[in-house]
Image 1: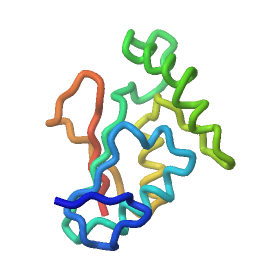
Image 2 (image 1 turned 90 degrees about the vertical axis):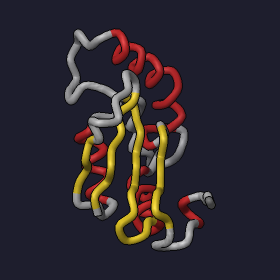
Image 3 (image 1 turned 90 degrees about the horizontal axis):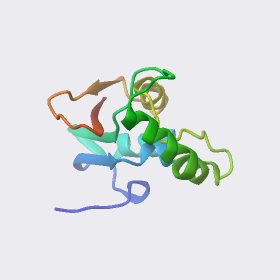
Length: 128
């Protein structure tokens, strides 16, 4: 087993490259996802875990989504915006936002891994 920061990771050698509960915090998620894409070996997996939120904003979101909005306003969004040229995603990152970032990073799409059930997190596989 070996781990490395994705920016310094060797190209095309890792069977699994993961980002757990952090893409929404990144000022430039596209460059990080592109580095993850370069690092994964042919046939390997890029796995993203992030908050399980609704597909679209609704003013009557459930209690968990309201909690995520609170985290976003008080922690994740200010943290992400503290860097110059930040995209400012925040905690409530919709699947469509991740898909946009993934395509810009060179992935062909995003697959939701529904078999990995969790009340708080959603798991995504980025397709090459």
